[in-house]
Length: 304
Image 1 (cartoon, one colour):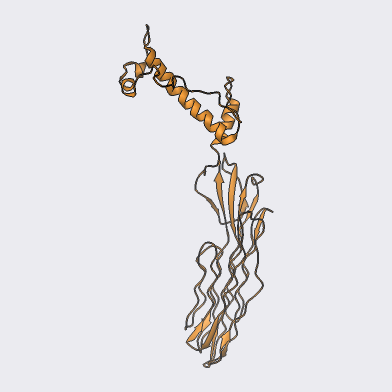
Image 2: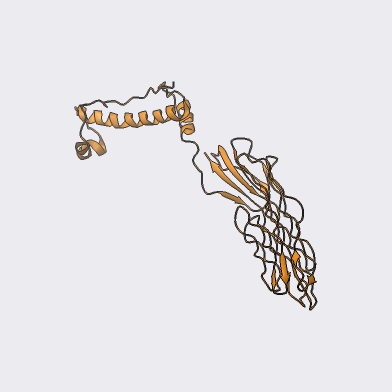
């Protein structure tokens, strides 16, 4: 068991020390004693105040590190162990990376929590429609998300931020997949797949969307390894009675809203890594593009 060499001087019951009120009123408190005899109770009070703080800090070292607090007249080991004892505090607000770069830790960083979000997929585009047709295309999937605690090997790591998936160009075109976000080779989060650009159907014919790709999964997270949400389908029964797919939400918020019963291009995602909304068209409409997905992001929390 670790030991503490630093003990409180004059800490016993009935110790010969000034009361706190007398201490605060002591004339020598500011300038110290002049030549002559010093009051023993005042000296004891001063020594107790300094020794009790030394004892408290030394006990913090013992309790939090399991190392001895040794009174050998040297500072190096005590200082190093004191820094370990108070480690773990958050050094500041999280660092948010929205573009690719190399990570340089803030001085004093001993561990980090990394959040990685892949880019969201774009929503599907909608083709032009005749007077007897309608169409409702699908929304994009969200990108994968991972979270990890790292205590070493993070300095100088390459941060890659995945791009937003583009909405499908005007017509029955699928949205594109979002880009992969990563923290070096340690964490990888693929982007979400794009929404399907549906073909126009005859008014009164039910329309049920399709999905693109399969569900992706993040890798490398030792707290969370999340998967991408499946792309949202567009569906309908007739003109003015259809809904395009909403973009899937990510860990950080919502995707582009679906279009309900009207002709409109897809809505863009409003959050990192979320999917873009699908386009929709009533009868006699021009081709419309899908909404873009949300870009990826890497967020790092730094701890002492």
